Length: 571
Image (cartoon, rainbow, N blue to C red; front, side, top):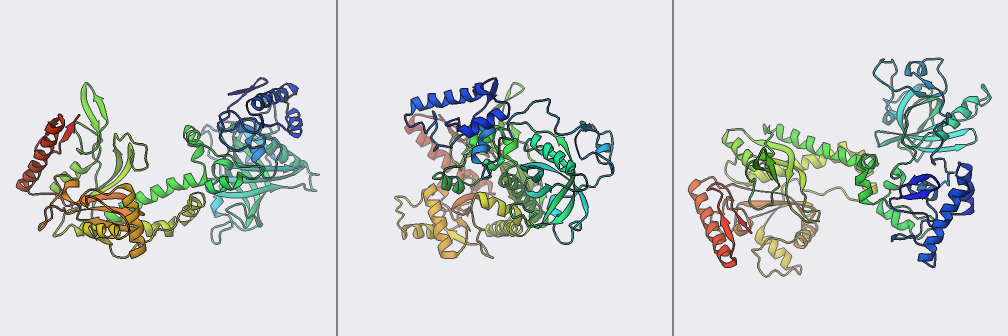
């Protein structure tokens, strides 16, 4: 926190490092007198004493950002059009937004040009048809040019010059349209002046209702780039805080853009992850992040539809259970009214019961909890799992085929139906469309070991599980050789799989199991479960003897939960 005169500012990633004379005068013009400017200069001098060059602020590893006073003023130093400090906190008595009116009066034919709605409290249902921004200028669904439309959207950017106003309105985070107002001879510029005062006084991210006439235009900076709104009336629905934790203009730049700007006179701000997470509600307005939520929704929807068409039944298994779902992963312990309980690590036991209940197939989309204390992208304490279970007629390759067809369907639908969202995401986080084959690409374990070995990966024991590096390397090799990002690695060594995995018939050292690898990373795994009780007890006995031998050597205690449960070593 930094105190400037009697106002407090929060500086998330940048602090004042230099105050130019021009900015001093701008501060004064907005009600910040010599005391505020003097405080800023004093802060600059203190920094200069710590760093003789006076170029870097304390505890800052970033390059100099010209001048910036906390987050509220960062838009001044970063703004490409060098707008004046219109976002500074203003007096509460400022009435440039217009008078307070009821929505009924505002939307009437003789309503005022600008104003602020009274708090909407569900008192009336008004006959106002709002138009979606993403429909404007689209053949077949857009209102005609010259039609009057109402838009409710957020204020994304503002540019006022004299009585001319240019505003970008953003709706649903993804779609933008330009709205403008110019001086009109009919009223001598009175309405244009009112609109200019309105937008000079309103803060970014506020929600407004705009009534305007649709006109043809060429606006490359908006998603609706062939039309614009010529403003007739505008009203404030919800007034945003004058100072937000960060600016969306800063938060939606790609890392490539930020790095490229560091050598310029006006380098871009990098909004750090902690600040984004602390204000997640604001960060999710970033188009790419908002689009990611839509992609997640589309993936789950396609998964459900694909399996439902096969006759599978969606189940909802408990997440608060008395034991452990798996033996190989850590578990979150919780108190259950004086008894011990755990958060479910997997729905696998319930999926097995669904098969014993004679369901044709079962699937679930739900949370999975793993107490894995590791700071990598491969270890998540909570994630959404897409699980399914199905009966096997003759061979586990039947399951591989279903997985491949389900994932292929998801990929196809995303590229065809969510192209807009993918384009937005790839602009901020560059990536390519996935490559996959019509038929499953299945690589046996021994084939994979030969492929790695022939390309310089030397493994002391080929029966050990793959490391992260080897997995990525194998993904690149398969992409080069077979032209696919999606493949299945099967016939895993039995020693690295759970004891309930069915061993291979002719070579029991290998198992009827597989991993689903996508872009060099495991995204799923599966196996034929050992459904023969005698064989299962034999498998469990072998593993139990091995673990007990290890425990004796290391002086640890071993506990077996039951004949049907995997057991784990307790330290």
